[in-house]
Image 1 (tube, one colour):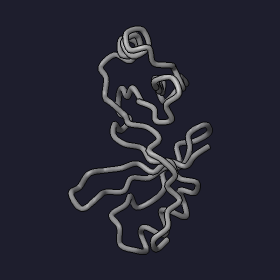
Image 2 (cartoon, helix red, strand yellow):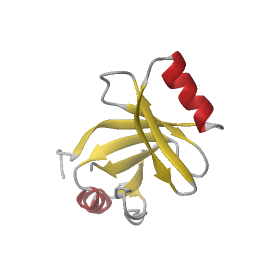
Image 3 (cartoon, one colour):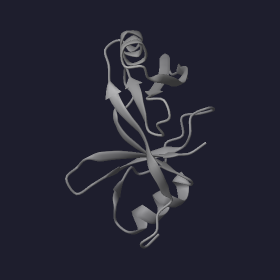
Length: 121
């Protein structure tokens, strides 16, 4: 990788919510955001909203899914291998949760902040 990156954008910022529907009602009804994604995920659902025209979304995260910043990458496996080879603190393996969920892995910065690299689909 050395000076180049497959990371293309800050894709999603995940915020933890106690009630996804209540949060969705707020972001859409009160702030005027659009629903960009609302799909089954595990025992619940995965919900992303954004202001009209915005490229970065907010994920309304409930349950055990990780909150935080998600970065889009064109190739999770290649980024994972490159970063590990350079000694970057990453998850041991690329996470594969099954059909409909893109490959992803976490990387931690020198202060321990975790970023999730998610392959663009």
